[in-house]
Length: 155
Ligand SMILES: [Zn+2]
Image (tube, rainbow, N blue to C red; front, side, top):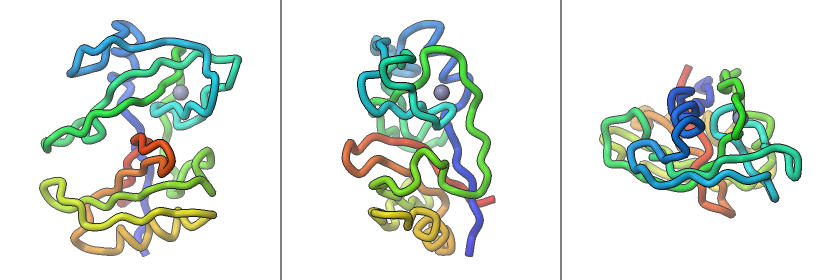
């Protein structure tokens, strides 16, 4: 069984969006508003508090920092500074028991397989996928919204 950690978007990306209100690489305008629904921050991997905290919605490449064809999509971050998530070998608590899609990628961004988790299977699914030698990393997405959440890598 492979142990793993979750990788959030880099702090430089979050800082750049907050400072410029533009999407890195794409230049699309970012949008800032008080969270009205479930808005998971891709930097600290916590939820932006509904009706209390502001979120910034912008476009990010799910393959940020990797030298492969991009896959841009909408994500939220806290409008105010937050601490980047530090992995601890589990799926972050905010996402446990959620409907998640784990996309396992191999060399050159080839999709090896995907698993859609329902209740509480996310850690075992991630370990099972990372036990396959052809899998290099996993993208975790919301099954309902389809949005990119974070990446999983082996420890
Ligand atoms: Zn945050």
